Image 1 (spheres, helix red, strand yellow):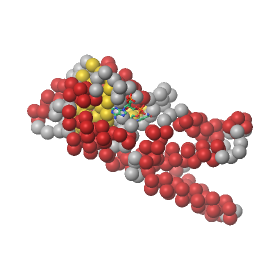
Image 2 (cartoon, rainbow, N blue to C red):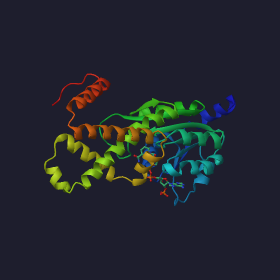
Image 3 (spheres, protein in one colour):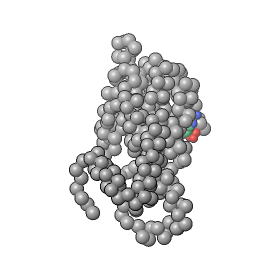
Image 4 (spheres, rainbow, N blue to C red):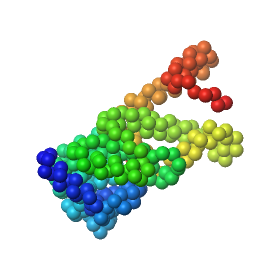
Length: 275
Ligand SMILES: NC(=O)c1ccc[n+]([C@@H]2O[C@H](COP(=O)([O-])OP(=O)(O)OC[C@H]3O[C@@H](n4cnc5c(N)ncnc54)[C@H](OP(=O)(O)O)[C@@H]3O)[C@@H](O)[C@H]2O)c1
């Protein structure tokens, strides 16, 4: 990208026109609301909106992709070439390597990848973090970073590959474990009411997590497990670990169990005993 087009891009980011492809969906709506005070116009685009993705892409200064993970590269391939070369392209996808490679390949515009590490309905008090990955150009990165931080969102800068690898563990394996736990509960022969009556605080925390998942789409969780190339390896490790623990329990091998427990303490470092 030339110095001239980078300069133009910076001007376009002053009070820009933004198109959010997927702006009628959950994350796209959250992102549109956050950007609204910083933009001249926000076009929230879905498959049934009056404005089509094609028209919105041609008219905007900033083009954001927030569509289901499995469709993201396909939508980028079709829509990204229609944006101006001095626009900014972004995506909010929960995996970063493939969507960013597609934005860079199918357009000469500036590119920033983003992944909000929270759900759109997450109104808890815990600090929210959004990962940003630099694709092409600097102005877009500075622009979105300032908006996120002024909205109280912490920014973590990463590469697409490092993001996807960590997320394979954090989202892939974490949700895999929650689903296996949910499956075990549903097949236990005990009703939810019966189990909740006996619930310990730790059990309640786990059940609340599963209930939160059940309120969201199967597409999101299926894609988190299947679209991240690192997730399968971590899930297999998890499965192996569970198998090893089961074998120790079956054999009543408390010595081996103790060694395994000690080695885990080594990983987690010193923690206060809470009881
Ligand atoms: N939900 C989360 O917790 C979360 C968190 C972080 C990141 N993300 C990421 O955010 C993105 C969107 O997820 P979501 O949960 O917001 O999904 P969602 O609620 O299902 O919304 C998807 C949006 O994409 C639109 N869309 C679907 N196919 C399209 C197509 N072919 N062309 C144009 N628009 C299309 C939908 O439009 P219609 O109105 O026509 O259906 C809708 O606006 C995903 O990449 C996901 O990884 C989600």
